[in-house]
Amino acid sequence: HQVLDEQGIVAFGLDFDASDIMVFRSRVHFHAYYDAVPGAVTLEVDAPGMGPADLSVFEYRNIPADIFPVGRHWR
Image (cartoon, rainbow, N blue to C red; front, top):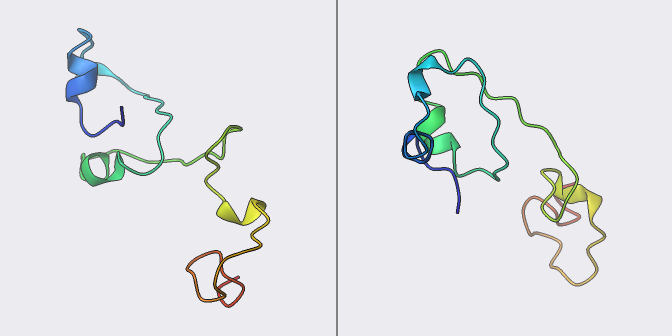
């Protein structure tokens, strides 16, 4: 399940407003909510695993050249 807002944190009994640092392993879903939280700063980290943040690390063989952002016309 993707992180969409603070309700997943509150549901576990944690105080969202009292937290200084939160760490999420998520692709991009959290941005819609957390980018609007006053004082929030987002630091994206490319952690190891099946879904890297940098899609250029894959070798693409069978895609059109104009596919954004990984097609050869966009690199």
